[in-house]
Image (cartoon, rainbow, N blue to C red; front, side, top):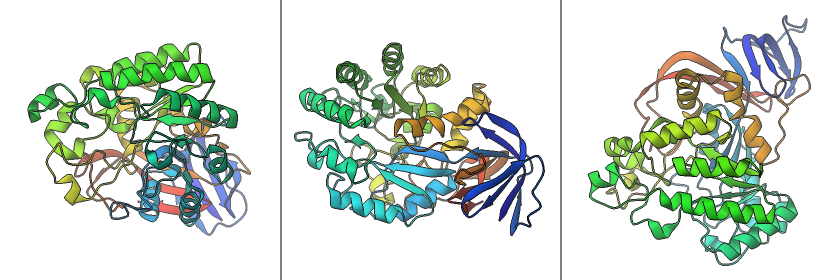
Length: 421
């Protein structure tokens, strides 16, 4: 048995916020109370006032497996997840081959089952991510896919998207969308503004995002589907989602820690390690994203964990791939922005990592209660550490080398300690 003492248990699922003792045996929470049980534990963790949260869920990760395992594989990705407090992750489908067939889906899920965390996967919307022919969505669902996305490649064919939405609505499955209209973009990953001027390019304007969000919200309403706007980045995008949610609550939006914490100035300072799709934008956009989280327009924090090899990121700005790693630092970065910086209550903040992402993909959300699976994270908010290495195969992050305040010190999944700082 594992006993955790002196932990401030904050669990939005069960409306808990108090210092408690929690005991775990055979993968399940067996006791919660002010005092310990009379059973002798094999190990005691003294949380010393640190937070104990339900394990986090990231609905947007790229583990590059199969096909790009020089960047990441399912095993190393899972280690990053555990280090960040995540006990559930949802893999995107843009692997090689893509998760548009049952064999690849089976490979991903079987390999994921061998990791210390829970690995889920989406299937693609279109075959081969080509945006021209729909996958067999029913077969993918029956084989274990929990949603659909062509993330990384926007779906430009509105008729195809409508068919996909209708199929997904019939299956009661969510569709998550990368919202960037390619016709507006000359060079992706860099905001059209100060950053693009710095590099002497045109970049990616905000209209690329807002135009596609506006189109797809209207199609989603018509089809009655659960639609998610992935990694929202612009104030216009936030306004569109806010207005849509007023009469259509099945529109969801996620935001990344880096879009909440950084602006296009980081793309100037850190170069390719701050290049991502959609790009970091202005301070006005960043503040609009924070406000969107606080007022409930944006309900999910997702990392878009996107590993790339050092050699790939060393290319010039227009040729280097977009994306950064983020699982290991996500909770720390956003806690600093939203709780310390914006005054968000801790219980509401934790919902962004626990209740809300699981709601989108209909994953169990039992929280910290007797009889529930023992999936949880212990977070020391005042502990400082230098983020000087990653458990990923990649290291592409603008936060690398920085001193961060707040650290995940334990992650417990399936009743076992899978990360210890």
